[in-house]
Amino acid sequence: MKLTHQPRIALVTGAGRGIGKAIAEKLAADGHTVLCVSKNPASCGPVADAINAAGGKAKAYPVDVADPVVVAQTCEAILKEYECVDIVVNNAGITKDNLVIRMTETDWNDVISTNLSSAFYWVKGLVRPMTRKRWGRIINIGSVVGCIGNPGQANYAAAKAGMHGLTMSLAREFASRNITANTIAPGFITTDMTDKLTEEQKAAAMKVVPLQRFGTTDEIASMVDFLASENAGYITGQVFSVDGGMAI
Ligand code: NDP
Image 1 (tube, protein in one colour):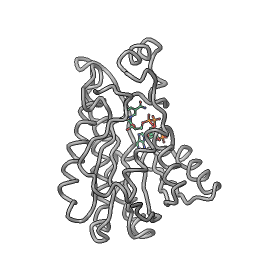
Image 2 (tube, protein in one colour; image 1 turned 90 degrees about the vertical axis):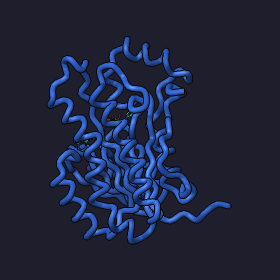
Image 3 (cartoon, protein in one colour; image 1 turned 60 degrees about the vertical axis):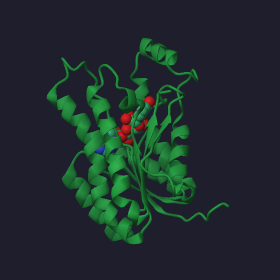
Image 4 (cartoon, protein in one colour; image 1 turned 180 degrees about the vertical axis):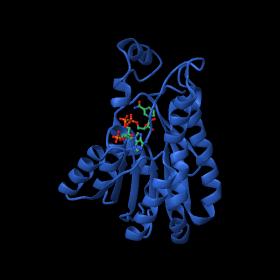
């Protein structure tokens, strides 16, 4: 039986470009109000404007997700306006690749704080009203690299594997309040992040993807949309690979 669909308040980090933009657009098209977070106002602003122009509901929040003080202040302001954010999608992420022997402590810390600690900050700031409402969805965007590792990406792989540890703990901690937490682990998806790869790196990537192509941002957004829905209410603590078969 199909369950009823309720419009919710959703927050998406990294909504200014790539996967996060597609997630924001998909959730908005589904009738949810979308709070679009990105670092640069010139990035999340136009995304929110376009959603509003298309008849949806969105608001832009230019915030550095790696800054716990600013995230906490933003969460407070959001909760004054919306009372409860029902769906939190932690998608913002960066890469600062290097072999461990050459990786600086700054590159390690920047990736851990932007890709992993940020998810903790947003959940900490937004989860209390969800627990009172007894409904919530936390969706963390991990990576195939967090499941299998990658030379040159020790910081990124550690952050993404850590994100799934966080997800499983959140799933257990908030299950009694009907809040689910899941990770999506994308493989190679066509965005600014993968545009940085050299042609050799792209060719090497193709060799390890059974479906023989990069994924689209929409293919990740569709999985988020499902996990955010009523129909996914009995799924929690899981990691879903959307990677063309890469991690089989
Ligand atoms: P993009 O580089 O295209 O976009 C990243 C988004 O994150 C941007 O909107 C950017 O903001 C935002 N962001 C980065 N740092 C911060 C920060 N400190 N504070 C606020 N916002 C920030 O990335 P993708 O769309 O490719 O990736 C999205 C997520 O998916 C990431 O977590 C990534 O690790 C993951 N992923 C991506 C894969 C891929 O192949 N593309 C594969 C596996 C996982 P702004 O626009 O303002 O710069």
